[in-house]
Every structure is written in C-alpha cells, then in structure tokens.
Amino acid sequence: MKKAVNSNQAPAAVGPYSHANTANGFVFVSGQLGIDPATGKMAEGTNAQAVQAFKNLENVLADCGSSAGLVVKTTVFLTDITEFAEVNKLYADVFAAECPARSCVQVAALPMGGSFEIEAIAVQA
Image (cartoon, rainbow, N blue to C red; front, side, top):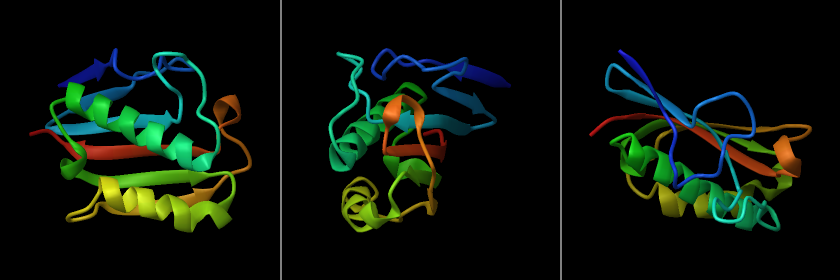
C-alpha cells in the first residue's frame, strides 16, 4: 500500500509532490534542496546547501520510519560537478557505514537557484 508523507521538519514542497512515499517497506524520498525549513530560504553556497539538504533528507526519512543508515540508493544533483570532492566529504559523514549505491550528475539548473539536491530510496525500520 502506498502512503504519501509530508514532514513538518522539512521545507514545504516547491511543487505538486510529497516529500516521500512509502510502499511495501520502501521509502522513496523526493529531491531535497538546501532550504532551511524555518525560514524557507536557500542556504548560501553548495556546501551549506548540501549540509541543509542532508538534514532535510534525514528528517523526512525519520518521519517515514527510516534513517540514513537504511538508505539503499541516492541520486545527487550538482550544478557544478567541480564541487563534487567537497560534497563527497559531507556525503561520507552522513553515509559513514555501508554506503548506499549512488549516482551523481551535473545539471543545468535546480529549483530556486539551488546548486545541490539529493533524492533517496530507503527501507523502513
């Protein structure tokens, strides 16, 4: 059974989508940007956006009965792939053990002028 989940610990969606959907023990998290849920503003710079997006991701996962340790696949979107090495260090802090499968791509643009976005698939605890 599919269930939409919207977290009050993540920024409001910037379009017609849910923060996540759960189905058959899996969690499918929509792309999380570096937006501070308290202010609705994008963090300054790619590293700060990544840190905030990881927090948003972890909050959505928690509201779905999951966690970063249960993520099986991520997709990372960067507007400047030359920032990959710095973002990779932050990523390693979040996914320290048994890292999920990952794709990372450079894109022309992200919503709200963002430079970093991450989406994930996880299992529920």
